[in-house]
Image: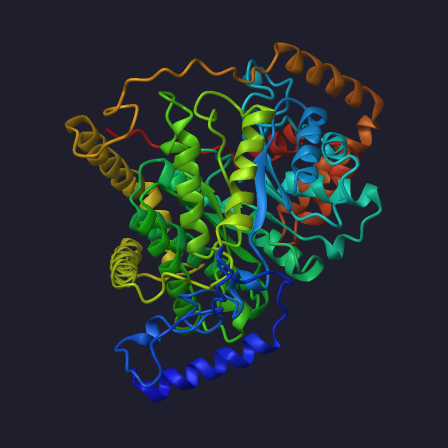
Length: 562
């Protein structure tokens, strides 16, 4: 790019920056030195390829979505939490919000994630252990008791039974008196990554896509600020994928959901802003920063050039980041504080929109109050003390970071091409990327490549080529064992008792009739969300709703592969 084009871009950025709202804050170094909101090539100097880097708030958004960077608005501190029953988790949420957290992120227990009630035989021993148990709208009311759902953005990390759980969230907000059309938050809903990595599905892919399409339609029409899909790379990376695989598989899944929306006749400029993303921030500092920058650039280009989006917000890749759970070690767990801080800093320098920092004891158990506070304070130290919020994309123009960004992008593009090839030549009713994803799931293509990457890394660890402090180097320590959070068996006993009482107190015939009607609606082309909401309002449980759909649509079992 020649010097005149660069100067014109700087002028466009300056005009947008001047017009944007900025925080009332001190934008100087610790020593009091003023810093500019963004840096670029010196005046009058050409920079080949600068159109791929650009300015913050301009296509291709490599340097961020907003001209102000974090001077306009810092990232949202959204700590992921959930354990035991709804009352216990409600107390943790109030602690997080009271300590300065900006939003909530709900972790559900395994029975809930699998669409099972707490009294289901398959739930035995699992209730409340890896998240909060939610059986009905009444539990959701308790979960958010005293928390204004109309005023707090809430993320829910659940995919298989995401739609009925979302309906319970809406009914809880409704019972608070909230205007549902104003709700803001994110539902994960990403079923592709379940087949690829996490394995928490209910049905075959097609029924899940039917429900997701209904959800996208409903939110676009009724709750425009709510994001019905958070396309998740986090679980793909945690399963052993490389940074480039995480990026490529995640964005390919996102393209599949764009094709789903288009196949429903939705306007990409209307529904695409409702798609968000969820990435892992691992411990290789510069690789992660490059991954995030490449992600924004790829998404903007594909949405514009492949899927025909024309509005700026449809081109924006907005993402939440969680530090890498898989990087945490049971050995010398205090070291995890350092790992988490480095990973969080990479996410921030990569321009994340919201962030969860893992607690030092999460490799052993759910976090204690003390370790959860340390994790929260880690973000607050980065935000308040380090100066990283003062300059947009401060590493932009670094020879290393730009080369790494380009390399990861190129690897991702190669993977996209292979996924589309998997779909074959024939047209798919949803779209070519979707066809390739479904074939890749069926053939074990994704899981095979992830397993190979995980194996290669494990070999490197065992040879000592890759090092983890406290595990295969620097193993001596004077640290003592941690006190960890333990979930009492009484949580399950009490949850089952309360569930039995609620079932006995409801109008059972009305609840069962509402579930039956929901299934009947599912046999038509009508949107299922209103009927599912009616079932939830009648206090039908999550297990009852999901069991009725399992009876109608069957269940999915992953083919055995050797």
